[in-house]
Image (cartoon, rainbow, N blue to C red; front, side, top):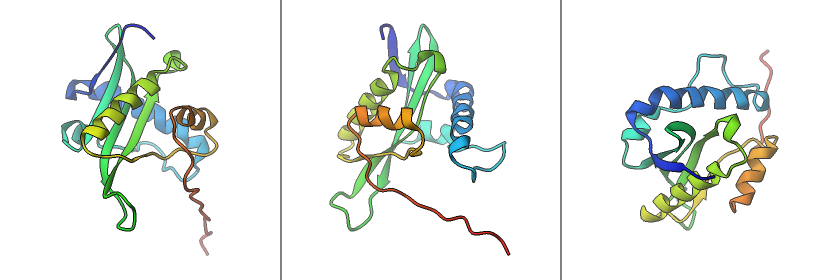
Length: 156
């Protein structure tokens, strides 16, 4: 897509980014019955924008923020061959702008940041049933790694 500007998120973007977060939560509710009722929040976006170990990126088209994502440095488990990795999240694109490779552009920017931080492993989580997201991540080179399983116990 032409005329796309990728840039670091700013505190002035918080209103829009919080709207994106709510849209993301709404999109994920059908995949997870354990998400609490509204109002909830997944992220502390203000803190993420301010932190040095997090990169929050937005895509703008004609001055409108249309897509977002972040990478944050996380300590790896002691038994892995890397000390830290970049965890990707907050991947959201407005419906009218989906299918235009904006998410791939944001991930490219986040990958570059991760490399500059010395992080050579990228990870993210996605609901298995969210086929469009799974396919987009596979297209970007990600592979399924661990299948987290759960069993909800009933209260007595």
